[in-house]
Every structure is written in C-alpha cells, then in structure tokens.
Image (tube, one colour):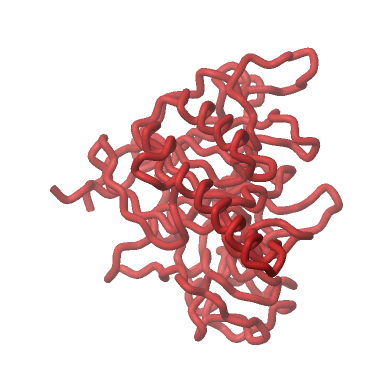
Length: 348
C-alpha cells in the first residue's frame, strides 16, 4: 500500500485557553503558545470550552484560527454542553417555551460549528460527528477517522453514557454484563475493509493514560475492547488532564480472540484484557519526553513513520496519545503533540 508521510498536530482540553505568550514566572512549564508547529492536519480531541457558552466557542475559534494546518478537525467533549442536544433538552423545564429555548440554544451552537455559513467553516475547521470519516489531505494522503465525543457519566456533564453501557462495540462483542447502546460500532481491523487510521475520542480507554490524581483508572473498558479490535495507527484523546502523555502498544497475536472473548466488566478491568497485548500486557512503551525541548519548540515530537526508522506496524501497533493541554488546576501547561506517521495515499 502506497503511503504518504504526514504530520499530525494533536491537542485536547484547551478549555478556551489562548495561544499567547504566557507568564513563565507563573507557569512552570508552558509550551502551549504561538506559533505551534505547522502540520498537515490538526486534531482537537474535545473540551473546547468550559461550559459551552457562545463567547467561549469564539475564544477557541480564535485560537484554532492561528494554527498553521490546512485541515483542522475537532470533536466536542463533556464540557461543551450546548453541543449536546440530549443534555440541554433533559435539563430544560418540561414546558413548550423552555423546550423551544433549549433547541434554539443547541441550534445556535451547532450552526457556529457545522453550518456552511458558520464561523468554523469559514476558518477551515471541520466538526466531526460520531462515526467514521474519510478525509483527503492536501499532501496527498487519505485519513480514515472514527470519532466520538462520548465519555462515561461523570457528575452531570455532556455526552455521557452509563458505565455499564457499551457505546463502541457491536452487540456480539459486548462484555457479558454490559448493555449495548452503540449506534456506530468501531470496525475491527481486517485486510478486507478500510481500517481506521486514527481513533479520535474525547475520553481514554481503561488503564491507558487515564489515571487520576486519586489513583483511579477513569477510562472506559468498552473503549479499550474496541481499540483492541480496531488497532488503529493512533488513538488520541484527552479528558483526564493528569493522564497527559503517550505510549506505544504492541498487540498480541491473540488480540482478536481476546477482544471477542466472553468476560464481565469486572473481569476485563481486573486484567483479562492483558492477553490482547504482547508479552501478557507488558509490551507497552512509554514515549519519553524532553520538557525543555517541548517548551522551546511548543510541542513534543514523535516520529512513528518508516522514514524515521520507527514506523508503526499497521494492525500490530498503536500509538496512544493523551493530548490534554490543561492540568488538573486548569492551567494550560501541557505540550501539544506532533506525530509523524505514514497514512494511505489517496486514490485519484
């Protein structure tokens, strides 16, 4: 398969943070400032705002407009409340006036991001709804992305599902005590269909770059199962600010069987998933970061292309990236990620 070396810039959880020179006396580590490195495609993994106010969206659009990338892709996150119609509608009082106001609020937010006349479209920014998208890039590559803004229910935020609900797998592959609610299951990796190149979700999979400052693993077990089946080149996300980082996973030869095996949610979380990773779950390599270099160059650079000598083996390895810019105190101190990767050449 012919491929094109492609540079991907990944950010998440910017929460209205501007791209500006920051007070380094206040920030111990602040590489999120202009100019970010030029890329072939920018991906924002959600939490564009704090609460989905119109003014907050425009602050984020101001920031995204400054980034030098011909293709800019975004999904919302749990903080982008007014982009979740179900959330807004469920919080409206049950009278016609309130319901009409709720729908109008969501329509206004969605028009800003999705309408041909909306500001996002004018700025060259594409809002991805849940499901699969194929996008041709100006550099000649074609990227296949599965996108989803949904995360396990956490207090009372947007785009939630219950922790025993599976939003990512087909009914036959759901954990035994989970309720399947997946409208768009993630496709498995095979050589007979177009595989997913980038899995783009707001939240992390279970036990992968998802540990909170309390020591809990906050990621989704069902998403981990879907990840193991689809085995994309990149899985990027955010949501858990303290999970910022990247790691390279090598899948075992038995990954398909493990991801299809019968197991309860607790059995999966307690380690039955590990057989799907090479070396009984230990073939996971943390990406080392040079924070001084990141501060100087405004990003952490990871080269997993053939040209760089560390090319990912499609279907056998996945680079996981938690790209949350904010820390737990909502200071924009984490670095963006620049990933060089080989993507399929677009068919002309």
